[in-house]
Length: 120
Image 1: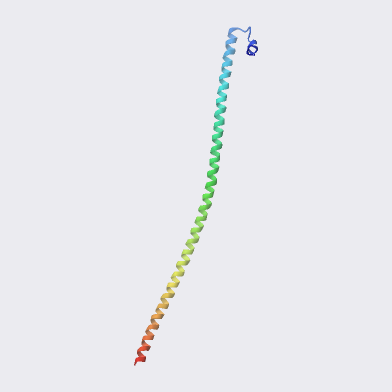
Image 2 (image 1 turned 90 degrees about the horizontal axis):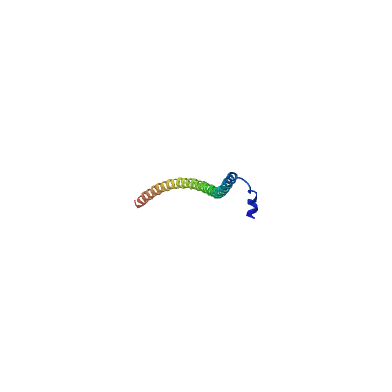
């Protein structure tokens, strides 16, 4: 079959045959170069897709972490408010204890005075 492909070249001058050979060689070279570039393109496209997936994954993870951070900040705020309320309640109760302690001491003195009066 290759002889049929080459048949059209019969009768051409050596100079023309040389030029045809150079062009065929160049065509082969360009085909190989095109295949290499096609392979490079496919490789780069695959790498790009992988990077896009990675970026998307990191965006999702970032969004999750932001939501978690916001939730933790709200929790901290609530805990701080609760701490302040408990601290205030404690101060109020300590004041009440001090008042009652003072009243107790006063009552003890009154009782002692009454007991001394009774003894007389």
